[in-house]
Image (tube, rainbow, N blue to C red; front, side):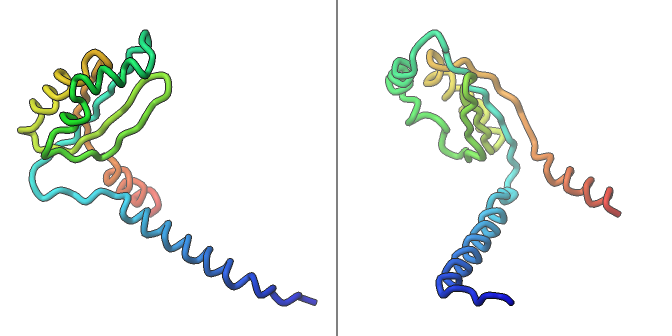
Length: 137
């Protein structure tokens, strides 16, 4: 014999349904829209100077105007992650003509706290998705 659901089950079920819907909306919005104008992706490794404590690095960044200069206007932050023990990894979407400006922002405001590495990148996900579809056929 089955037991009827308690009266509290309806609000819980509604909350779960709402959460699932919110997750689907979040996943759909997580895919960045393709830009209309020509653009490129640039991944930047900002490696921490581990010989200095974090408060000292933050003071250096503040003194250099890092928070005002990076990222430069006209660029879009696609992702920005902290890699513990390494530093930060930032991916920007930018018009190719902004590349020099991004480089100068890092050189003028980030050096002293970070060692930087730049990697032009591209979004392989649509290619991978298409390859997966072909494999399933």
